[in-house]
Length: 301
Length: 183
Image (cartoon, rainbow over all chains, first blue to last red; front, side, top):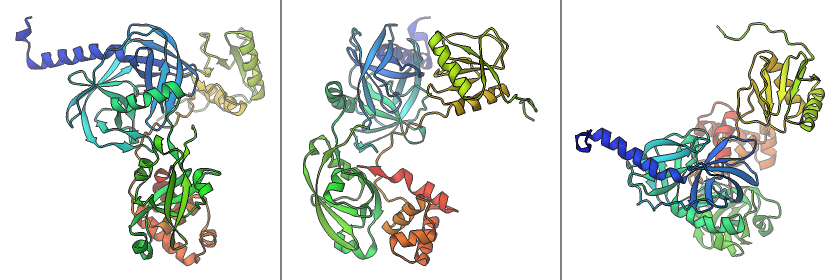
């Protein structure tokens, strides 16, 4: 049958299959001994990235690439903050991919995953929502919020997500209530070097467990805001403990800038913050007071 | 109503056939079976169930428990570090015609930091909720926070209302755990 006699749907379907075939060399099956397989993405020559939260703790994993090549890979680094783990291989091919354009809600995407051997499983969906940079619960900064409308099966997170033009959006990740997010290409690129060289991504740390709360009514004028971060736990000998922060304190400002939510605090605790002095303004026993804390480095999990 | 056999008699002490790749593993599995209160036997002998490291396909019609194996056609799966009590429970279960699976690992949940006090709890309410989460009673909460038990009751009622919870336990489950982050 000649190409021009095919209807639109057939052409659409063929185009999708073509995109999948083009992206398939990026799909890696990752298996840690004693566990079932997981998905990964061949990011560079000899480097596979995977979902940190899904990858069992181990030193080594077996990696099977799309061409059937099987490798023993070293798990070289993990960053729970951005949910990226890197595995180092020896002698893999050079993957070919290009950056995707900024995604628009409604744009079609293909999420590829490993099937446990050298094939690929595919989910077709749309970009469900996009948003600005955000911080994960582990304090990592994710460059864009990209939600997908697909579901992922067991072992499928960590595979490449490509757009309709075949550009790489990032790797798939399971979010709250099994929603599917994308860790953007820019974020993976940013953490890749520190993960490969040091095994982790340095991140500022205060050692305080906090929760956003409303500032008690009588103190709102004095605090200058209605919302703060209540300290519900202080890590022993951590930076907050050494600064004299106590359970029950409500942090209202850091270095003069109001903090009402945890992500504002996380913003001030980036890699460059380690070793810096921070002025904490907090409410304790009905009065506002100041403390000085030295930002530490978040200990590995 | 149920497809399960209605009444299965499971002997107190089961004979467990050991199938492993090597002698050393077989010995380790046999010791674990003995510790769990059952009798390890050779693969050639009559048995009630099979315990394997998964490396050898055992075709005997008996229920098989695989230790430290992720997948396969087995009645039971146990993690590699399963203890005698877990093995005992698993052996009885498969001998009774049930299948055994370990609890799935923590549900992955790569979630954003919470930025809003939602639903808008006051600092005092969070303190009360934290104390409730530790299992303290009203009087103990009052003592810790230096307020009267009557005031504690007032805060708990407000918490139940704001969180749409019927009980204190439900309030704790709904209100607290997912909001706390360490920074």
